[in-house]
Image 1 (cartoon, rainbow, N blue to C red):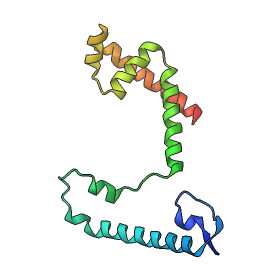
Image 2: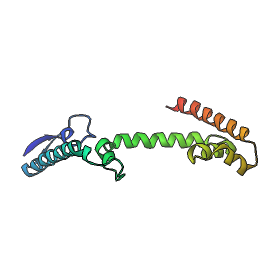
Image 3: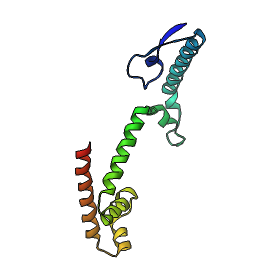
Image 4: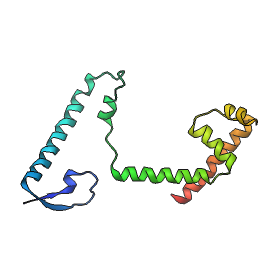
Amino acid sequence: MTTINLKDFYPWYTNDEYIEVSEEVANELRASRLYEAAYQRRIVRNKAQYSLDCEDGIEYSACVSEPTPQELLERMELFCHLCVALNSLPETQGRRVDACVILGKSYREVAMAEGVSKTSVQESVQSGLATMRKYLKKVL
């Protein structure tokens, strides 16, 4: 039996965690780590040979690593806080913030759909964003 440190093999372990595994498992983990390192070196060395106009995601995968489970949980918590902040707004204000900020509609489009002035929509959205900022500062 061989003792390995899980922190060396899994990026989401932040503290040393030692376990005993069989020789075959230890050898496979080491081989996997070496293969992954060689793969990352190949990506870094060869990324200049790919066209950035291709839009097949090669340059993105070469530059960005996958988020850790902890980062995914933090994003999910932030998303939940944003949803609660948006839902805490009055209905009209929330609908306008959703349309302009999240869906990307212009103030004019929202104003025409609701039959109000563009200035009214703009002030409502700005006020809603300020209220959401205050809420998020309290929570976070």
